[in-house]
Image 1 (cartoon, rainbow, N blue to C red):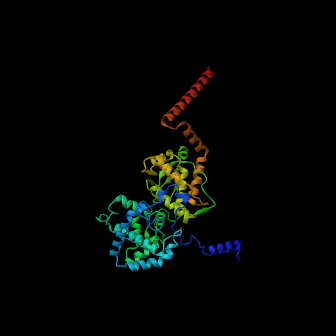
Image 2 (tube, one colour):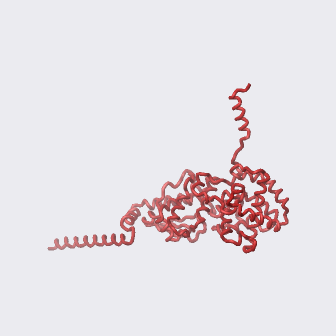
Image 3 (tube, rainbow, N blue to C red):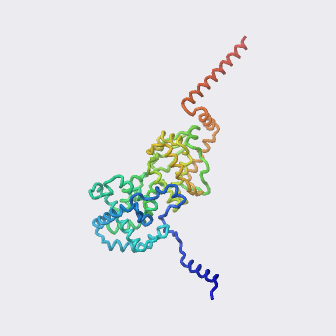
Length: 414
């Protein structure tokens, strides 16, 4: 007769036999960690269309399901490929793309294949229509309404709302010989391609979030330095009071490039609007989950977070055109920037250019002459009236000194 201890041991052994690694090396599509997601759930959640399994079936996304089917039908008419051929290829890829997702998918093989087929056909038809500039078809609800097409575009860059790029590319190649699907993808997301990256220079992307991040990276990427982080950096106001000038780096298209020389810090212009937070949060979430030691976007935001503490810092950057503030309220910009780094883990492996610039800025601020200027500006030149009063006081002090000297000289000559 088996005692209770033996029964527990047998049960545990049976349980462990079914153990498998929940996240594999193929994983590239992640649910954003709760500690990060809770600070702004909306930034990671699709507004109008679900893509892939993570948000499939959510009630507020059901309105688009019929239109996804309409686009799937349109795609099948556009291509000579049969439904059977497309489904067969998806079934063949199913074990591979299932491993791309960070969480266990509760869908059966048949259900997952159906989801991937409809979502991929929808994306392929959407990209074809945008490429062909079929923007005002009477039956096209997506592209005939700018507010909806804009929401769809931003939904397609969310980390949790992805299908693997290789699946889309393979289905597209089954259907067309040209242009390449990567070329269509570049065209669809061209407004994010700030660096003017050429699709011929891209070796491999995992999904659309990965592409958006790639658009923001420098070429070549700066080296990274182990065992270092930015521990302190004066704010924009403190640096400005010490005599530092902020200037837009006009010649640089890459957002991450910095240039510090003399008393001028040049930074590429950043447009701040109501989608900026969504864009950065999803790129940073991808770096947290997949690129912890190549976190170039996180380095940039961390640098901004040090520089910007209050609306006064934002005001200075807006005045110098470093920020184009489309949010209106400078308090909102400061709050947004300060909130991006909450619960973000910083690796001790930082971009060399940010470390170099940070050290130079700290040295600039600690310079005794610059510290004196900062103190004088902070204590005596806060505003125009205070500046005028301080100037008048200095003039009076000088006149008093001159008068005293003259009186002493007069006494000496008597």
